Image (tube, rainbow, N blue to C red):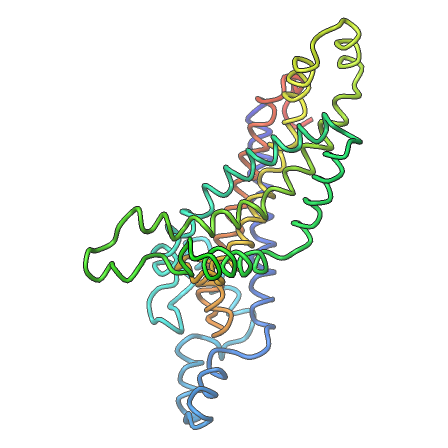
Length: 324
């Protein structure tokens, strides 16, 4: 029954969140250095020891690890991981102020990369073994092998510096001081980061769609359709609907890849989103902010997987019973 399947998936999601939260807690506390160490270095090693101890006490960092874990989980389920060491404001509020800027890049990049990756995957599978297929496959392997921050740097070098067509970075021009924030100006600054995120997001969808289409085109019902003399475009269109299901299933992992890519892209382009905030928090060992960001990423991926799992039986008519 559907409700049994739903309860099972929800239970698995909660357990997954619990395990991921434990890993986040342990990894962040085993990182070398801390906020105070960085602060001491910035002050030339002259920060009084009493100030350092007072900071640890005020933030509960002097307590046993298991006590810190209890506090961490009590705040994790309410998304209250404490006050940012660097900014002195609640970490959740800090992320809420930045997440809109990140979504401005992630949403169009996710849509474009999915659409282009699917189209190229279908085209490549249709031309399997040809020079077009081999060239496209080699290009996608190169794009996937090169990190996103390199593509971002090259995009700035060529299209913002050598050919000054796009801005070098940021989210607005200096004219904001005179005319105020302009939507057109913000979108113009967002164009190049979106292109880079789209580029690095295409290969994953392309690989999956190409392999799924190649497998589907070898199915008996496709061979039968061709034997009946159906036009090739109609055969490909029929295979496309079945081959698209694995892509939908893996869409949650594509979201995870874009989230990680946005960290590097936002840093390269100085885009004031959660990705740049993550870099700043890592550099300063801002634990409350890092905990909030990683928990948010974890919840986003778990929810995306849950939505896909619950919708897949509705998308695939061959699935008659839930949970089987």
